[in-house]
Each structure stands twice: as C-alpha cells, then as structure tokens.
Image (cartoon, rainbow, N blue to C red):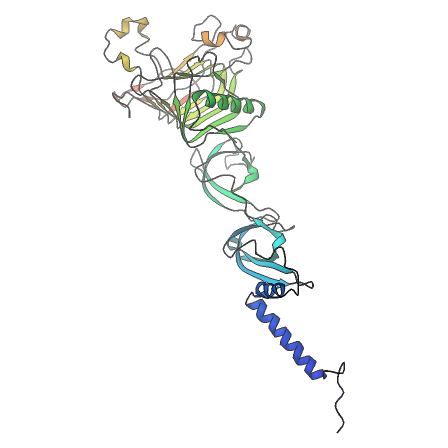
Length: 436
C-alpha cells in the first residue's frame, strides 16, 4: 500500500489543520476566561519565558480611570467594565480594558498604557467658586466674576476635552449646569491650621492677601474648621485687604484672640480709589472669650463695589468700636449677615447717652463716614500706616449708598437712614445675654 504523503515527514495536512484549530480554540478559551496571566505564570515558572515586569494589572473592574488617548476621548473619565490580557509575540503579558462612559452610553477598548487613574475633582460640593467665563445671561449681563456654590460634580465629556464639570447655584439662586473647570477661577487655598498659633495663622493670612494683590480676580478660600487669629499689637500685626478678590469660607470659624485689624488703603483722591470689587462671604468671626468679647474690625479709606454676605460676627464688637469702619465707600452691598453681641460690660451701666457723647450706646456695627485727613471719621489708625494718606484725603467725600429698611429682631422696628447706593438686605443685629 502506498503511504499518503506527509508534510515535513511527520504530519499530514489534515492533522496540521486539526492541530491549528485546537491551538486557536485554546487561545480563544484563555482569552474568554482571562487566563493568559495564569499561562504566563506557568511558562515563567517552567523557565520557558522571562516573567513580565507588568504582570499584575494596574486597574480593576469598577475602578474610575481617565483616558490618555489623543482625539475625541482625551481626558474622559469612565469606569473599567472588563479587564482582559493576552501574550504578545515575545510571550509578554499585556493587559487591556473595556472602558464605559455611562453618561454618553459609549464604551472603548484600550491598552493599559492609554489609561491613568482618574484625577481628583478640583472642586467639591459646597465649595464657593468664582466664574471666569464671559457667558452671557438672558439679560445680557455676564456671569464673569460672580460667585457660585457647587451643587454637583460629574464627568465632563466634550470632544477632546474631559475632566470634570460642575452644576452650581449663583447668589441670585440661578442654576448653572455643566460648567467645565476651565471656566472657573482656581482658588488660592489659605493654608490655615487648627493647631497653629494665632501669630502663625496671621502670617498665612497676610501671605494670601499679598498673593491676591498681585493676582487680580483671585478667590481666597478658607478651609473648614476653627482657626485662631489675632494679636495684642494689632496696629503692627495687621492685614491689608486686596482689590478684585473674593474671600470665602467653608464652614470656617476664625477665632479672634485679642484684636484683628484688616485695613483697606486709599489709592487716590477720589472716593472710589481704594479697595474695590471685594467679596467677603461665608465666614464666622468669633471671639475666643465669649464672656468679655474680643475685637475684629475692617477699616477702609475710599473704595467701591464691595459685597459682604452670609457672614456671622459673634462677640467681636467691643465698646465704642465697629465691625466695619468705612470712609467714603461707594456702591456696595451688605446682606444676610448676623451681628451678635456688643460690649457686655455695658449691661449694668446707666446714663450711657451722657458718656462719650453717647457713642458707647450707639456704636454702629457698620459705620459709614466721610473720609478726610482732618479726622471727621475714625481714620487715625490708617493715617499712621497708609501711604499718601494726607494727599489722598484732601477732598471730603460722602458715602453714596442706599440702605434698605433695617430690621432689629429685638425691637421689631424699622430704620431708614438716608445713605445712598450701598444696600443692606436681611441683615440682623442680635443682642444676646449669653452666647454659646
């Protein structure tokens, strides 16, 4: 009998085809069961191949990852839905993944080198941020420079632009959705520490204010917590307020030890030439001694366009003083602030109207004056330290503001002082016998 011709002297064609089919099925089985890593281990243990340095996968199913691909999916954030592995032609183990972007109902298949761990979102829910986008409102005004509170953080999936986007609420309760990071001013985070002394935190505050003076349109963000500030020599250990800056808290309590002065210097002879476009929001200024009180004061000479809202001042208003002492400030808004407690030592005194011209009795929480170098206002502190004080205060300017009806919770009455163009809305003054 003539024997059938064998390929390579060993196998017939049909045998080779069958062998190839079996090998293909074996590789398919390894792929389907994600067992190439086990095969790699077996071959490496037997000394048949060199063990791969990246044998263990960097990412697991369910983990958030960020694409490093060029093109449409650049920087998109998604989740690993499936992890696979295979051996290359040199028997090196390679991991690759299916990544799903649920918001877009899209999946992609990528190698491990095309991924990285997802970045942490720059902002979190509850953060107060400042908008840099010139996007136009329906009334043709822009959102640029306004503050907003972050309500929701979610992945941003725009062509060739990933990362995160934010839903937020403006101060006027308008909602903005899908704002990307590039349209938000990154805050300078004031690095106060709860374990710091007041002097150490004072230095960090001055550092932040100095940064804002050279970086217009800054937002200075306080951390969450209680932080000591203040000094026994406040006329030396003071801070200078910057313009074009938002100073915002995040459940922040600044515990005043001794006295705190924040000054706003004049920059020219006109009333608006001083600290301008300043926002102060979301901070609780609280005395370290809630029985005797401490002293916090912001004093400014000239300036315009301040917005002071959602702050609380507890037992930091001392006898014959003010929270805000403002000479010729223009076009500003104070709203939703709480002023709690004043000069507890006066509780048992009588005849207050006859003492110091009655100023102990009606020492305003917020005082507006006509700034002048002749001290018709309380500017003696500034005269000693403000550059060009005399030259910038030769002209007597009135405060052009509006104060809407002010309601005192204690007497349930209304006052309507005639000061123009600075508005007070829902600002309460409370007189408490005991503060806790």
